[in-house]
Structure formats: C-alpha cells, structure tokens
Image 1 (cartoon, rainbow, N blue to C red):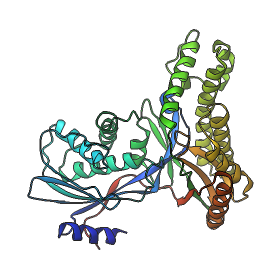
Image 2 (cartoon, rainbow, N blue to C red):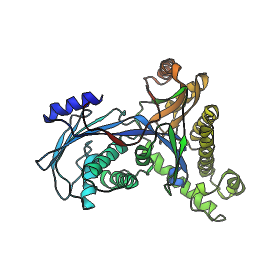
Image 3 (cartoon, helix red, strand yellow):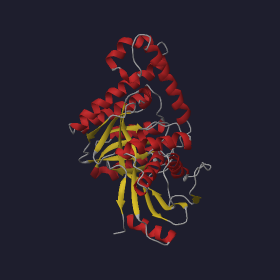
Image 4 (spheres, rainbow, N blue to C red):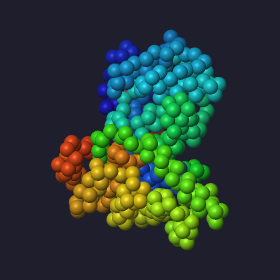
Length: 388
C-alpha cells in the first residue's frame, strides 16, 4: 500500500513525497453513550485509517488530493479559511485554519490523502483525517503542540469549523491508541489507562450494517436530554455532577427519585454500563476474553432494551453471533441506529463467521452487511520518509 501511494503521489505532483503519516480509525469496545455522562469509555485504535503523503511547494498553495474522492482543491496560504460546502477537504482546511489562528506561519504543501476506513460507518474517518493532518503540520512546521493539544485542536475543528457536536473520544483514541491496548478513558478529566488487550487467538470483526444512519443525531440529542432529566432528579438528594459519579448500588437506593419510567431506563443503562467498563478492563487485564465477551453481550442488551438505540440491523448481528461457538462476544458500537457492530471472533474462523453472519443478515434484512477483520493498532504517527 505504501509503495502504491508514493507512486500515486509522484504521478499527481511529478515529485517524491517527503513524508508519509498514518492515523487510524477507532472502535469503542465497551462503554456506550456514557461519555456525556461523565463516565468511562474503552475505545481502541484499529488497523484501518488515513494515510497522508506530503511535500512542500514554493507556490504558496495548499493542494488537497485524495484517492477516495474526485473533488480536489488548491487553496492559497492566507490568514483565514472558510468551510466549502460538505467537501472532504474541509477537515484538513479546518486544521490549517486552527494552526493559523494560533499564530503559526505555514507554507505551501502538496498533500495526498487515502483512507481505507469505510465512509459513514461510524469508525471515525473524520477524526482520523483531522488528527493525521494536525500531526503532519505539527511535525513539518515544528509548531510545538503536544499530542493532547492536537487532540483538543482536532475536536475544536470538528465542533467549530465542521459544525458537528462530538465529544473528544474519537480524536483521543486515534491519537493515543497503542497496539494491543484498549484505552480506558474518562472523557471529562481525560485521565486514561492503557489496558493490555492481547486478543490472542481472536480478531476484532467489524460488521457495518450498511444502513443509512438518519435517526442517530436526533435520537442522540434526545438521550442527552433524558440523561439531564435523570441527573436533575437525583441531584435533589445526591451531590453529584454526572450520572456516572455513582455506581449501581447507590443508584438503586435513589432511583425512586426518577418518576418518569423512560428516563429511569436511560439512567439505569448509563450507570450499569459505566460499571461494565471497569469490569471489562479487569477481564482484559486478566486475559479473560470469555468474561469480556459476556460483558459485550450485556452491553448490547442494555443498549437495545434500556437505552433503545439499537435497531433490527444491529440486533440481527448480535443475535447471530450468540449462536456461533467461535464468537466470544458481540455488541453494537457507536451512536446506534445503524453504523457498526463488533464481535470477537476466533482468528481461524473469521472467514466462516463473515460468510455466515452475512447470509443470516441478508436473509433477515434484505441487503448485505460489510465485514472486516482488524487488530488493535497504534495511534497516529510518521510512517516513513522514503518509498523504500
């Protein structure tokens, strides 16, 4: 892949690339819909991601090219940059705008992007593009940002330049990911622990439902509101800032304060899911993938029944996975209502699982899912300075 990209760069720009960078996508292994409730999430970097090749130019222009999109753009180096429609190059332009606003002097750069993350799958292709661009500019122009600075910068680009109200988990995971480690991250304090996650004989199957995710954003905002209601009710007796400031035992003693049955279900998921993340970290650290798999199924069931953000597509994948003896666990991952599910599958049975889950899903849903195999990979970094 690396050699092919260098050849394409040469074809486009008639010169060699100076540097090659890579930033992964991410999945959240467990801990869903609790990042905005002060809880713990457990994402990991995957082995799919975004490649960026660069070379300086003397023309005072940023040139954006991608092997994934036909749209290309040349933008003069200037003091201020605007978003242009819904084009893919808004992500790197937003990063450049942020560097410029922070007072960094940038010069012309020829860029070639290539991503092997399925677009719109919920595996953080946008965070991957933002972080790889920020990392490259920081490296090339010696801007002096720390990795955490780059994470915050990329989140700010997503929120303020692109206009998507996301949390910090995606950017954090693609920047700080480590091979064979999951990140147990507190999204409020940004304290994190890298948890040994050697998958051994297993691989991470990522199953894209291929369902357009039309409901995700409106339902996401609805859930945020319901959690705020639950918190306000509990705060009449408890001194807490977030739902995740209490565990399931304390919640049980005070759940009578929440009088709305639906809001009660939402709070129950959040608090129990937060506890599940801690149990999952212990299971992974002990190399107990059987226990970790049970927690994945429990998480999915709660997202389906208590939080109601799953759907027939994601449930069908979890349902089939439970019947397959070569699967340790499976769950929906991400906001829900489509997007992806993940499963821990025996490495030597992956092809059989992929075929069987596709057949089962297609028969029930009417179209095929896409199934990928991944390991837990490293975060953003410099790949090479030459073709060889």
